[in-house]
Length: 209
Image 1 (cartoon, rainbow, N blue to C red):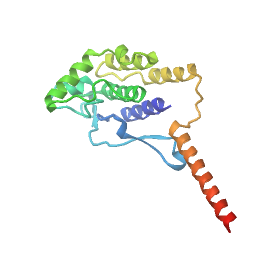
Image 2 (cartoon, rainbow, N blue to C red; image 1 turned 180 degrees about the vertical axis):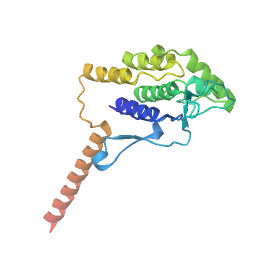
Image 3 (cartoon, helix red, strand yellow; image 1 turned 90 degrees about the vertical axis):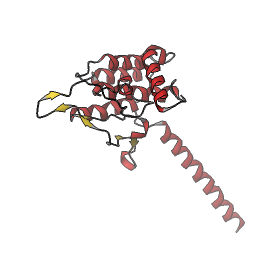
Image 4 (cartoon, one colour; image 1 turned 120 degrees about the vertical axis):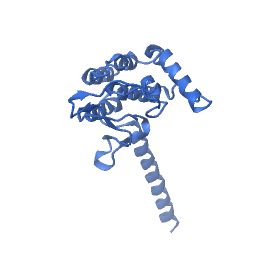
């Protein structure tokens, strides 16, 4: 359910002509109250328009000398200093989903200078195939990443296809799309236990009187 909402949010930004350029878990939050099941995307400090309205053209692919975004989730293109496109936001989102799935990414914990870490990260992301990264997990995750990696710089990823892929996986696993997330069940359970403990304390106090 998160994957579908995340794709929706990133697609919405892209349709407004904006790249986020720093997709990571910290930049997604859930609503509260009646919108507690709704996902929001935040922190637009690195956003950039990918379409030049005056020239009516897509920004060109060029190389700079700095990294844009958070290295752990950044695409190899970002680590090498290339201009980012819609595909790079989606690649970062893929790494976020795989991070959630695996509980970690193989390039975490790299030590060394900033330049050394960047070089090792780039090498690892270029050498590890999507299939290797997602081994033992549903093939939809590797297929997602592969699709984004081969998308041409100026072209939009196929958001509909990627979203349908996860929806099909959801159905195949026989999950129920009830908009209730695991952490909400834990919160409700904790509240029920707290109420039970409070009721016991109240009854105990009443009995002693």
